[in-house]
Image (cartoon, rainbow, N blue to C red; front, side, top):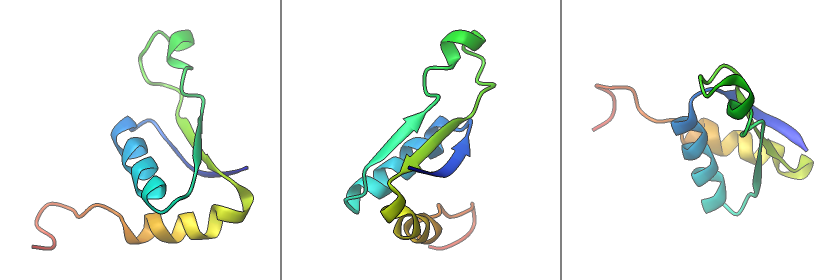
Length: 74
């Protein structure tokens, strides 16, 4: 497995998982339950992992699916 991203932002993590799931790429979140040990303060980042063979495609998908900043786009 390869680490695709590491973040404390659970909203972005969920977004990335949804984008990859729609493309048929399975993901696994490592360290998702570390909050139990840290007192639920969000110090430890969660890692989004994909299969070695899916890494390149997953990185391309996320690069193309980045959310727009306020004022961009439509």
